[in-house]
Structure formats: structure tokens, C-alpha cells
Image 1 (cartoon, rainbow, N blue to C red):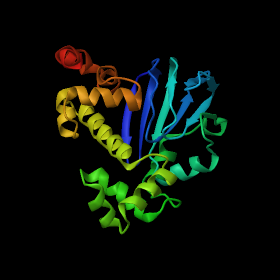
Image 2: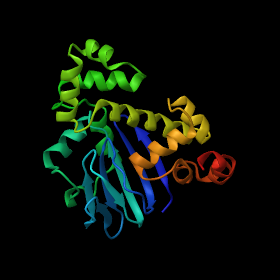
Image 3: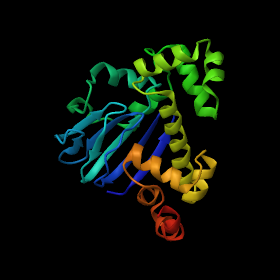
Length: 235
């Protein structure tokens, strides 16, 4: 299966082989669909989960097991498709056989629509954070809440602090920069990370892989050259 990576409004999609990853936590829902056989993951307690399709809610610690052919969706919590996942998702990894035929078109159509379940003020704050850095007091003032109320709303409805969401939006920009041909060091700079090492630490924490491992999935024809050029910076 040829690897493919795409980023759309409210989601990202990877198709191809899955590598064994380190334990990590996304700021988005993850849907892993096996093209053949079953997808497999291990949760923080060491329990192995396997099914034709698996759903992982945001901030649930897990690692991927190696799978030959996989379709993986990352659905961001502010889009309408995430409402569907919130309805059926428990507190951990769960089998979702009804999603085994999920197509990118299904996610794309719902990805462009805002969530109907999240507070509009929280959605506005998430949108503002995606545009660039802003302090919590300024962000709260923009959406008409106190900083304390905005923090509480994010933890209650998103299951994560807004600072975590901010990092996820930066990682999204870094991935887009890598796919566009930037080196890992350049991607770190344009997406708001302090340096390449900072990007690498957060990529491992939130995706379970380093930029050097992700790069071949994004740009197979250029990966070997870029990894050789940037390997020193990742050490």
C-alpha cells in the first residue's frame, strides 16, 4: 500500500503501514481502520485492543502496534464529526466496527462544520489559538469569559487544557510545512516551536514518532535526503 498523508479542515488522514510507536496522547480523536485484518493498539495499562476499527478519544495515552495497511483519521474536537465520536466514545480505546468503511469524504464534509455540542465561546477561543499566539487573559476577554471559566470549560468539554490544543495546532502547521518541503528545523521555526529539538519532543509526545520517522510518510521521494541533512539536529 502506497503511503499517503492529507490535511483537511478539522482533520488529517494517513494511509499506509503503521509502525510501532511510543506511548503518546493526541489532542484529537483518532480512528484507526485496518484495510485488511485488524488494527491494534496498547493502552496505558498494557491492555492490547484490536478490531477492524478502533477509536481513541483525545488525551488517552496509547501506542500503535505495527500494522501492514491502515487508514488513520485524526478528527479535531471542534468539528461536527467529533460530535458523532463523542456520542459513542467512552473513556478509553474502543472497537468501532461501524466505522470500518469510513471514507475521507465522510470526514471532510463534517470537518468543515463547527461542532453543535461545544460552547460557541470555546469554539471561538480554539479558532483564535489556531491563528497564532495569544495570552490567556486576552483570549478570555475576546470570547467574553474570565480566564478561570475558559480554562474550566476547556477541561470539561475538551478533556484537555487549551495550552495542549495550542501545541496540537502548532504540530499541524509543522506537518504541513514538512509536507511542503521544509526541513524539520525550518518546520519548527515557522510553526512556533523554539527549535527542532522542541518540535521533536512534542511530536513524540503527541504522535509517538519523531519528525525523522514522519517525514518518509509525508514526502517519500525526498525523505532520505532530508533525514540525512537533519539527523544531527534530532540527536
